[in-house]
Length: 85
Image (tube, rainbow, N blue to C red; front, top):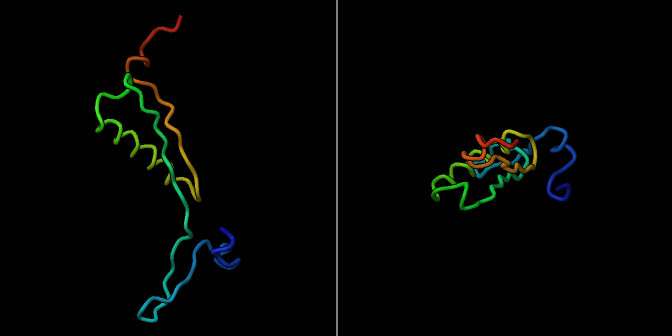
């Protein structure tokens, strides 16, 4: 990413760019946030549940500064209550 931002941008944590009206604006440095959900038949009943799980892990990834990813390691509801003895 150093190729796209100046050292001053990194020090400040944002870049300053002149907009079309000639006004300087501040923009956060570009980052990438990824949420990963493993999809299995046993875990999800429909695509809505998959989307909800994806939105949750993506939201968590966005709370971490900079580029990051979060992997959803939760199991399906039935597995939470199984006795492992």
